[in-house]
Length: 354
Image (cartoon, rainbow, N blue to C red):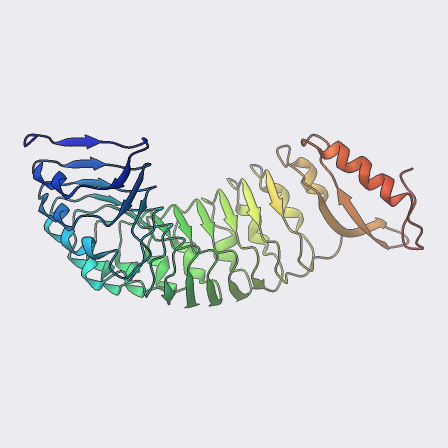
């Protein structure tokens, strides 16, 4: 089949190894074998496909979690027209070589997530200056986030979640002004959240949860008007929730749970008119539940516990649990909790429901 130009085998149950003879179809520019049961090494002969622009190897069992699994990537340097490379959700191990810089500068999308690629993220990635999406999540990358990534000025989607990255979030990440999604969650990142993230005016989704970040929440970040989803949970953030939270007119999901935030929940949070999911549990908030939350018609309460004041005059501090009875299974849970509570006798338990 010397004249074959496109080959789509995706979404089947193909097994065994990818035959190296595929490279004999030298005019192929689109090759998709995703979502199969393919195993073994990727043929280095793919580097002979000089017209190749799209290679999708995702969702297979390729590789063997060994050091030579990524040898074929070096051979792809001969594919000068390559625009998309997806090798996510496989069994690739080894280290991502600095030779990745020799890949086609036409590359716009690189997906390496869901493997066991280790070592540091190469600084040389900056050479791929047309990248729009760089997805390296759920691997074993260690070390710091390379500052050179900030030179990828066209980048719109950066995902480094679920690795072993450490050190600080570089302030230069704020130079990626075209980003709409940034995920640095589930690493070991430390230090403060860079206020420069507030420079990313098109950012819609920001997730830096499950790290070791500390310090205050920068007003420049919590007030970023474009955000639809913001997750800062499970860190060691301190201070109060900035009043700039009221600028989040488009926010759908806000999660700042599992930190050490103090003070009151600002009334201005009621201006987040698109808010449906709000997670504040596991912090150190005090005072009253803002009455402005009642104006958020789309807000979906889950089983959430709050500390508040039941009586203004007596200033009785109580624990309050909110249960959304419209959620599936919530009514059974509510009944079970009431049955349990009515059998408990304690001087600090107020008998409201019987």
